[in-house]
Length: 330
Image 1 (tube, rainbow, N blue to C red):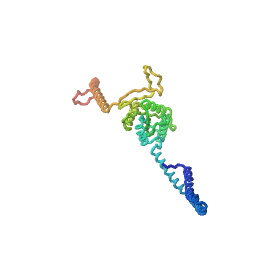
Image 2 (cartoon, rainbow, N blue to C red; image 1 turned 60 degrees about the horizontal axis):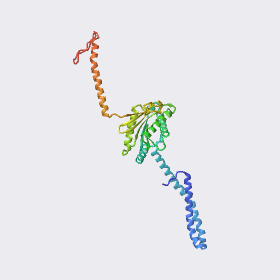
Image 3 (cartoon, rainbow, N blue to C red; image 1 turned 135 degrees about the vertical axis):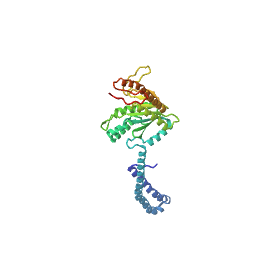
Image 4 (cartoon, rainbow, N blue to C red; image 1 turned 180 degrees about the vertical axis):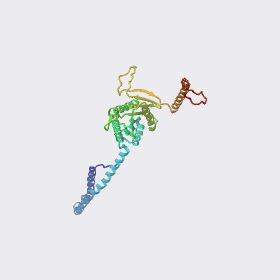
């Protein structure tokens, strides 16, 4: 595609076009002179000057006007392309462009997808204002660019949620990259726009499984992100399979293969625990069972309460299942 972006390119192309515009008619009249010799000299002397001067005066302004139109068209396309590709606030990829490039990458060589969400972001907006919230999002995007490799595709999915595709990454590499993001956020996002915020992130990871669509991978990563939120935030959860999630908790002691605790306690050491999210039906059954147990406990406590009231002088309690007048204090 013919592209011109700078004025220098316009002037260079104008000079080249003018040169060709002058040479072509001059050479057209010079060729007969080469064949006919001096007999053609008078005609050549009369025709060569108009043939050279006319394009010399006409070609530059016409070329500049046309090339300037090409330049404006190229700059307009660049602006539209930038608007489509990059988020205006954070500078990372837009959701549409990120998902499109992620599909291409997964089809070519697989990888891992990270869902990243800022913790308590609504509280930041409500407490410090949306301008500080915008600065927090910029800081988060800056940390992502610092912590991740240049080949990583970083994009903003919407609001305070970001997505990252790590080409060719497995579970270990995805967890390591996500933990690097969490660690750098703790160290660099403590103060934002002069406010002590202590911004942290929760991350859910999912590795591509052959045959799965990007939407399915994102759904698994989103489930892992929900698990990270539910288990305390500021941590990484890796979806290893359908329904299985590894939770990487902050400030945990890591046990080695010999059963001895490794040195740790700092934020770089983590403990991996496997948890399976309960189906909604099981959670509902547990809640119903818990409610029944509480009702039974309350019913068992009623007789004891009646005995205590009967022991109080001047108080009377109705018998079970019978309507009696209200207790009368004498």
